[in-house]
Image 1 (cartoon, rainbow, N blue to C red):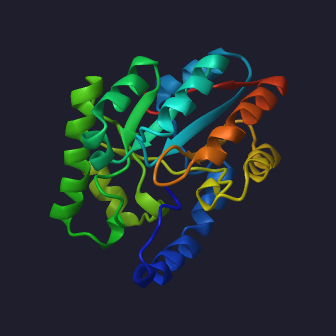
Image 2 (cartoon, rainbow, N blue to C red):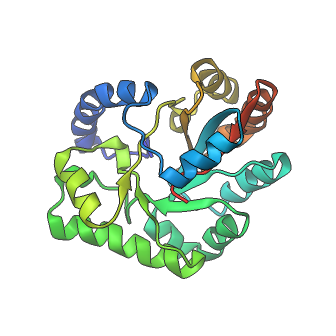
Length: 234
């Protein structure tokens, strides 16, 4: 996710990366940098309405993922979960449940490092090891990679492509990881969402009770505004 806890010695470096990707996030908001797989775009278009994409990072979490799944199930909404390999390894049944309920499970690295600072071999291992544990629980190999912190450059993109991965970032970030309160999370999403928005939320990496609390209001309001929901990356 964008905001998993960062050791103090790395906060300055990560801050620079967040500044550097500001232009990318703006581009995402304009729809310039999120290229949906053709099948997904067609499926969304076939619904004849406005579509948004809910995404959840840093899980699976035994404490919060099941609560997110319960809310999504109650509203009949499907989402995309960008999962951390070591969390999948620790809680495999949770990932299996995410997939069983029809959600998309994708790659968010093994241990949430800054991929742009890794060697080719280390980056390959981060992605391949995560693919392996996700595939064991879902029967499918992730087709998308979300780099931790959104730290992406040309090297990360080219390495991801060589591994058969499409890099997927986001266009709406309510900074739920900072725990600003459920009302703030809800309003930040609803005030910034547009047709085609990719919304960044977190179901792991810390206390996600505020995200869980904000989710019903986000979904119900978007539905009332005429939005449909779709998954990314198949």
